[in-house]
Image: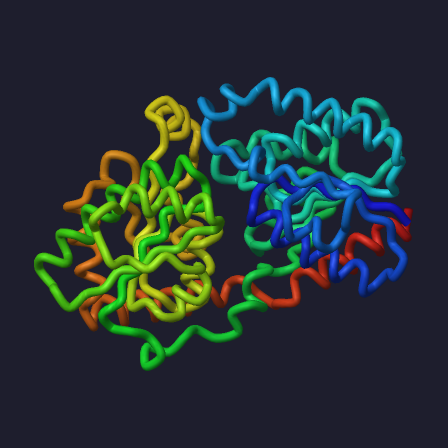
Length: 368
């Protein structure tokens, strides 16, 4: 049995690596190849094209600047799939590239099963795309229960396998294990995110330090290059520890986090936080016009209301961030948020997502 997997961002690479481990456990000897990052490469080996550093761009302008690269990569990947003739192509999130590839393979009448794992959030920005997705995909594997009826209404066989991160955070970290003087600054994994968010975070940290001298600040970086970028931006604002995200969200009393998978991890870890995000003006204007949900953060979407403060685009200022973080230091505010987070996360359903996804994929191919 051959599978070809495509992930284009760090979070998709992490989920892809765990899916690969589950697939190999259930089907020893399975042949795997595709596109991903360092974690998938460690599991798959040389047949995995490690491209996430180049592929992980966000925003219309950023994509347009890199269009020649993506066009070349798209053609190369199509050729690989034709040559390798996998039994199935597994698309892991990353909709801009993956949905186009699914359409191209469907147009070619490629016999491989086309299975999507971690469905794209089209319910937020363009539900009208769902019928088109149903025409080019054979199966959708969702991580949020509310997504299932949206896809099934268009005739696409859909299963909710649960959220992959739920297994990694079986219980929130108790406040007794946290440092009440420690605030986390988590600007994101991409260079552009660090450039946009980290100076504002540092300015807020300086304001907080002036008012609350006992506070300490830490930040996380996903690579040495991002850590060096952050040190260059922080300059004389020392000392600021730069560490690893997961240990830090279990130590910090509160934090500011760039929108993305990290916000779900913070919620599961039980750390009160505010969500921040800032993009190029053109990207924001287009996003504002097409996004059809009231909140950017998935936790707020799940809750149906804002339980995590969101500071987006022009609302993301040092002054507003300072005020928001100060509120998270207050016992009543943090307890209220922690209770709301726990109640909302119950909606994620059962765990063991990667193994359930692997089982569903293998059964789909066997039925074929």
